[in-house]
Structures are given as C-alpha cells and as structure tokens.
Picture 1 (cartoon, rainbow, N blue to C red):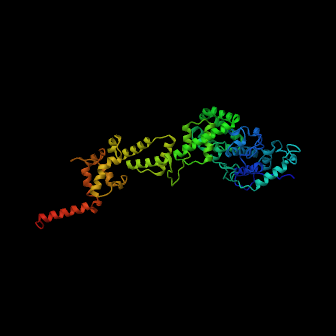
Picture 2: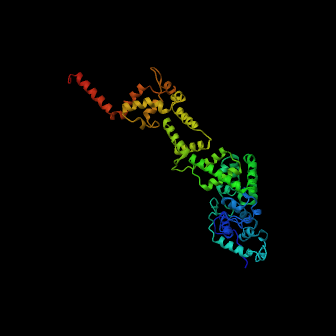
Picture 3: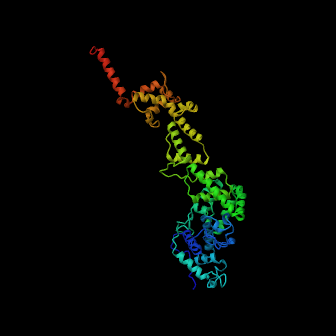
Length: 461
C-alpha cells in the first residue's frame, strides 16, 4: 500500500529537529544506529546509515563510512537529508525514499516494486518508506549522536549553532577559532543561513577554500584524504598517535577534554597539517570559564597559583575571570608570564608614581612596602601579612605622599610628583591612627607619660 506524503507541517519545533529525527529513523532502519557496521565485509554499504563507497565518496577523508567517527557520519547524513528536503519540497516520504534508491524517490508509482529487482533481499520501496516513516513519526528530534545539533527556533528554516555547523563538516568549533580568517567565514555562514540549502553549503565551501589558512593547508588535506583512501589502517594509527599526544598535552596543560572531542581534534590536526602551536591553541580553546572556576591540575594550576601570588606581591586585585584569561593566554602561547607581571607593574606605577624607579629595578610592591609594614607591625601590633595594600588608607597615603617645604603654597605642593613618605614621618601618622589607641604600645606610652608627670610633681620617686 502507498504511503501518505508528509510535509514540513511537523509538530517538532524546527527544521533542524525534524532533520535530526529523520536521520535517526534512517539510521535505525539501516543498521540499528551502529556506526561501526562494516556491512558484508567486502566494503559495500557500511556505517550507521549504510552508505555505499561511491555515495560516501571519501567524505571527511575516510574511504568507507564505518571508518569515520559518528560526528562525521552524521554530518554527511545531515547534509544529504537537508538537500533532499529542499529537492522534494518538504515531503519526508520522498526524503526517506531518496536514501534507499534516489532514482525512484520522485516516482511513487514504482514504490510497490523492489528497486534492485526480484530475488533481492531488499524490501519494496513502500515497505522501506513505511518503516522509516513509522520510526520518524515516533522520533523526538534528540541528537543522533554526540555532537549532532538540533534547532530551537520555531521558523521552518531552522537554526543551528556554530558548534553544530562545524560538526556538520567534520570539524570542531575550536578549529575555526584558531584563525581569524576561518572565524570570519563561520560567522558569515551563520549570518547568511548557508546551512539551509545545497547552494549555501557550496558558498561556505568556496569561502572556506578562499581563506589564507585553507590555502596554506590544502595540500595537507589532500595528502590526508589520499592516505585514507590508500591505507586506512595507517591513517587510523596516525589518528591514535595524535590522539595520545593531544591527551598527554591536555593533561599537562590542565585542560579537561572528552575523549570523543580529543579524537575529533586529532583528525582535524592531521587533516589540515596543523602545527604543534595550532594544536596547543585548539586545546586552549577547550579551557572553559565558569563562575566557580578553579584550575584543577597541570600547568593551569601552576599558572593560577603563580598569578595569584604575583597579584599579592604587587598589591593588585585581580578577578577570577581576569586570572582565567591570563592562564588561558599563557597556555595557548599567545602571552607570557613575564607579560602578566609587567601588566601588574604598570598598574602599580600608574597608581603610585613614586615607586616607579624601584619597580623598574625589579622590586615588587610588597618589597618596597616592607619598611612601612614593619613599622605597622611594631607600632600598631598587627601582622604585616594581614595588611591589604589595596585598601589600607594609611599605607596608600604613604605611597602617594605630596612633599612640602616651609613656605610652599598648597597648590604648588599638589602639583609636585607624588613620592614615598619617609618612614619616620609614616610612623608619626601611625601614632595618630585610631588603631594605635588599642595597642599595648599606646597603653605603655600613656603610663610612662603619667609616671613622668607625677615624678616631676614629686608625687612619686
């Protein structure tokens, strides 16, 4: 019996979700969603969607579909379903038929026959389409595999994230983040909805191949595709080795990356001949910030501790987000630890010009402040390590001291460059600090003064 055509008037919220549901329906019918299915063992149809080698056409640099990771198989399937959806005006039955036998997809009058002829193990076109549509009707639009996207917009053109768009081409979003020209093309593709039609995808491929980065690496990509075609086992060994290198680097850097993502990054690196520095930058983009961020190991933890100590030594408040950004930049090799210290030093010089020469000589704010902190310890009886140099007003006044001489006008004094207050004068200000009144030093001083007065009056010996 013939199947009833369906259109884009589907209850699921977006075209991307409908496409994802169709992908799952086809994959479940073809192989039970077994991405490693090798078919009959003679390199015929393989993978989750049972692609023939000629239809697969070395997609993503893999000779056979089953050799490709799930994200790459999904990318090929998503592109084909999207193209068939456009070709058949949103008729999902014809989309399903096109995957089975494209030549009959637009000829429902032939669907009660077996496309490959009598005696074949294949079903009739009607039976095939009915089974797929039954699965499609019960679909939820959830991702077919890790990395597959689904739209969230209510319009019929659908929406797709930058990460999903990248995955559709077998890449990770971090690949596009590694070079400004690639990032520009990705943004252009998303802005112009190039993912909505075969022509749009052609625009994207042309723009990608036109970037300076792609032109620089296109030879490597061709070599990688050739290796996959001639010697898939060697290519897989290279993927495994690159994956191991990236995993070791991620652990050393203190960057948490899933195994699936690392393996895809390994493929990207080999496919495009990425340098070690480019691999490092890609790993650095996997270093994610959260409000409760804290480094959890490797070089990231060492840098986090080092930067926190430097901020303490220079008396500069630094937010967790700023510290994260510096750690990420140093991990990727775009900035250095020395640049971070110089950044802190320049902030201190701007706040306390009188420290300029001493800072340039290699001293930190806390080293310069040591005599003042010692005075505070002796006079105010406080632990110098507990003093917050960014908030203690008495200390800040000592660092922005405006010197005066007898006869100097107030306006002239204000125009003079700030200097560091002499320690003897700083100690005088400490004895005027309300905190001094609570110290043992103050009590002893008052007692000594009282005894001295009584002795001068002859009231005590």
